[in-house]
Length: 124
Picture 1 (cartoon, helix red, strand yellow):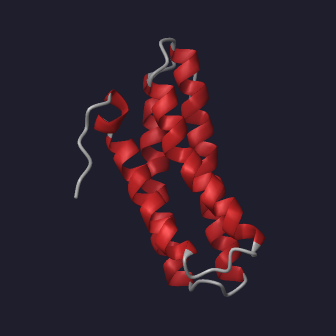
Picture 2: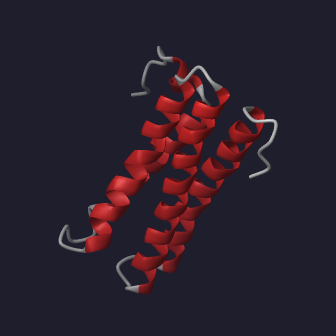
C-alpha cells in the first residue's frame, strides 16, 4: 500500500524514486550472500539516498540543502558502481544491473535539478 505523504520531503518525486530504488535494491540484495562486501556497501549507499534527500529538504539555507543533495547524488553514483561490481562478479545479470542503473539515472537527473535550483553558482 502506498505511503501517506505527510512530510514535505515525501512529496518530492526524487524522494519517491529513491524509495522505489531502495525497494528494488532490497529484492536484488536478497539474491546475494550477506558475506559479499558489496552487499553491505549497496545496502548503505541505497539507504543513504532518501535519507540525504529528506535531511537536505528540511534545511533552511540553500547551501545546506545543496550539501545534502550532493551527498545523495554521491550515494546514487556509488549504488550504480555497486551494481557494476555485482555484474562484473556475475552476482547479478548485466540486464539486472542496467535496470537498477536506469532507476538511479532518474534520481541523479532530479538531484542535479534540485542542486541547480538551490544554487546560483553551481553547474554540477
